[in-house]
Amino acid sequence: MNELRANVSDTANKEVLVSYPQDGVAVVLLNRPEATNALSLPLQDLLSEAFTRLGADDSVRCIVLTGGDKVFAAGGDILGLLEADPIEIMQRHTELVWAPLEQCPKPVIAAVCGYAYGGGSELAMHCDIIIAGEAASFAQPEIRIGIMPGIGGTQRLVRAVGKFNAMRILLTGRPISAHEAQVMGLVSLVVPDSEVMAEALKMAGQIAAMPPLAARQIKEVVLAGVDASLATALMLERKANQLLFATRDQKEGMQAFVDKRKPSFEGR
Image (tube, helix red, strand yellow):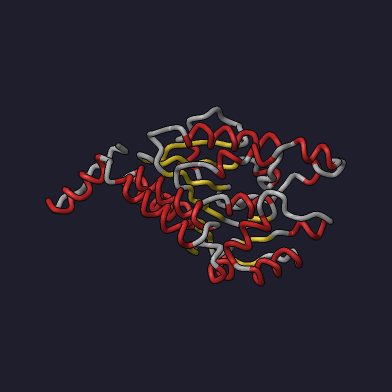
């Protein structure tokens, strides 16, 4: 991760660092190694701020979210939850804090090394693509401390892996390997641990080179269509596709194909 740290643009020593290693690509790095990137309230606030800014930045076309080459995120900060009461938990409004990531219009790739447990797994599931190292593992261990996932872990997991796999993960609290997660449909790609960031940046670069308006519409329709009827989802797809024919990038992409040259997409 030294190369990424060298490119950090935000103030050093923050718990969330943002860098721009290549055109159109931003990397968001969880930087709390002494606590295995446990998702403290300050760290969550910084994540929210980072994704708010990146989501509105037209120069950013794809985002990579990572915890580094040792661990993705260990989950919630248990010490901060130990004495919490129901009203305090409700007033934290985590749904609002996590909204900028959940609603980010840009494609987001999670680059997962080590373990993604509890809130860390939920964080990865907020992304659009998950690339995991061979030694990575995923878990929702909340039941083991008397609670349950509260940032979408039950709902996103069942949509990703189905009822029966989700129930096993949620009710036992036991971790699953990256390869098992890939077979279930939770992980997009498994690569050697040493290649996770390189693969994530390569894919992010490929996505960043695509027309950003098309990428945005694809993401929007996929997410909206998941919970809609097939007829409604197909209607959303048709409308989004029709809309893209009003863009300069559609004209450029098709003309470049005819001319047998590389297209140059402007996001217009």
